[in-house]
Image (tube, rainbow, N blue to C red; front, side):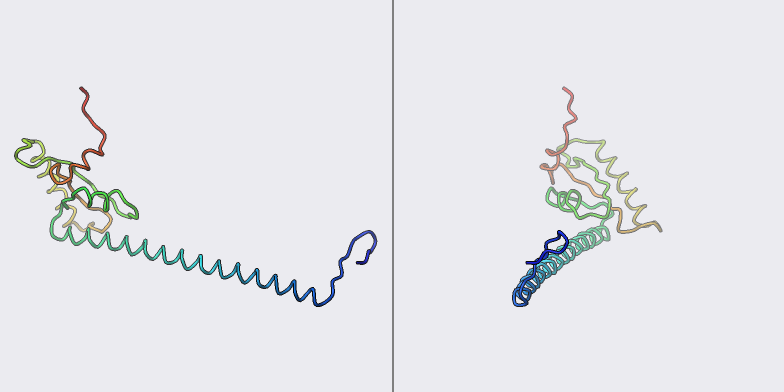
Length: 153
């Protein structure tokens, strides 16, 4: 060890420097490999997310090509409306169309929803960013149970 004007200078033999250089190089290599693995995993996760999104949109487009108003049960509602990723909007009508439910207003509202969805589907503005759907009580009672209650009794 040598001292120069109050500063301490550490002098190591050349073999020690090579050993430190190897250790530093090893640490840098490990960090680099870890970073590359992280990037690969992030990229794969992004591809999976993008693929999931494109599959969801494609399925919605397929259903829309058959019916302007997509009928959803509880599982479909959770997957296509509630769960990310989603880059589209869904107008959902909650209804009870089965005759035993005796909902006259539901039938009229369903007809209006169909007119609205058809107008959108056959307009020049139609895109894969907006879909129309309905959840009937008898096809998705679990969805209705998740909704806030409007009973004020």
